[in-house]
Length: 94
Image (cartoon, rainbow, N blue to C red; front, side):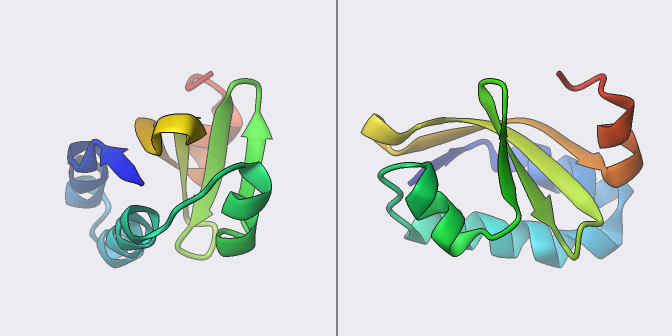
């Protein structure tokens, strides 16, 4: 799957250095995977939920969350927001 964009992950990690390794592990798993649907995505990422039109991933032991849009047909994921658990709960990312 093609990830757009790693920049959002890096920028979040610049502010939250402890998230750098889990975020890059997420990137590697996404880029090496082929996910035909939400069920296949859930087989690899146990902490993923569908919220409206977005997919929300719990990353780094639920320390941060990634909200993304996914086009399974063209195997592309767009990172819309990377946030802490507290920022996620505020809901401004929706």
